[in-house]
Length: 144
Image (cartoon, rainbow, N blue to C red; front, side, top):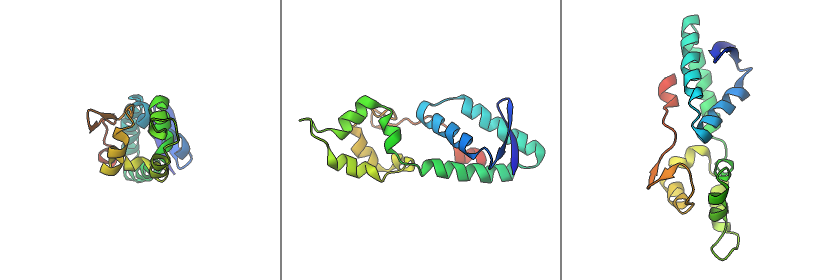
């Protein structure tokens, strides 16, 4: 069990795994900056307790779990864009797009084939002017 500060709370992993995965997910969805502050605070508190390496190991596991989650629910957040992605111009279901995205994971968002398909999505909030604009933060760099 690894204890650390998270905001004003003291948390433990693996007991707080679901909470931390949710926080990572919120960062990916909304770019919630408080998550970054809390990650830095968590690493600092773990360092002071001599648990930094254990916390990094646990956080890496959680990052990988989040990145392994399905991409489709994340895309559905942008309802207008999702409707354009799943529907052909004549109003029929775009089964090719739905089949293509069905097995994709969040980590696949950087894959060129996935990006090319999503460019037609129009409202994909992370693709702007042909570039990925995911909220900037190197989770792996922080815990390595």
